[in-house]
Length: 203
Image 1 (cartoon, rainbow, N blue to C red):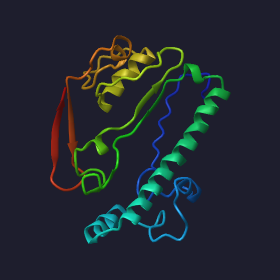
Image 2 (image 1 turned 135 degrees about the vertical axis):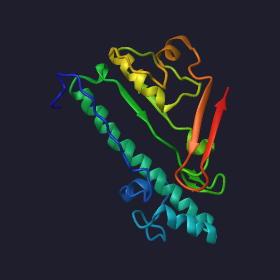
Image 3 (image 1 turned 120 degrees about the vertical axis):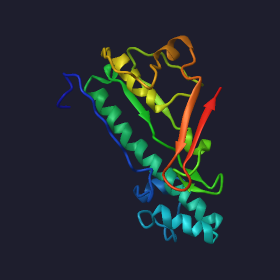
C-alpha cells in the first residue's frame, strides 16, 4: 500500500505447508479431519513421523497427516487470495508481476518416506510455477520442465531491467511466447538428510 505508486519487490515466504501443519483446524476439517486425533497440528516434528513410520504408522494416521497438509495448503490459499484482492483494490493488479512457486514438494509414503530432502522422486521435485502479468503475458500452460534458477533472469526480463550478470538460469519468456524448449536437461539434488543424491533429468 505504501509503495503502490513506485516500483517495488515483495517477497513472501509462507511456511504453513511445513510440519507441523499448524493451520487453523477448520481448514483441515474441510478435508474430513476430525477433532481429538492422536496427531494434532503443531504437536509433532518431521523426525517424530519418521520414527513412527519405522514402527508401523497406521494408514488412518497417515491419512490424518495428509488432511492436515491439505488444510495448510487451503489456509495458504485463503491468505494469498487476500493479497491478490488487495492488489486489485489498489488498482495495480494488472501491472504487477505475481510469481507463485515452491522450493520442494512433500512425500506422503509414495516411496515409503515422509516429508522432503531425502529422494529425487516427482512428489518432491514437481512444484507449481505460476506467473501472472495480466497486461503482458498470455494465458497458457507450459509442459516443459524448468528450474527455480530460471526465475531470476525471467523476472529481470519482464521488469525491463538490463544487467551484465552471468546467469545460471534461463529467461522463460521465449518459452511462453514461442513454445521454445528452455532446458535440455535439469539438474536435481537431495541433500537434506541421508546419502547425498544428485541427478540429471533429460528430455
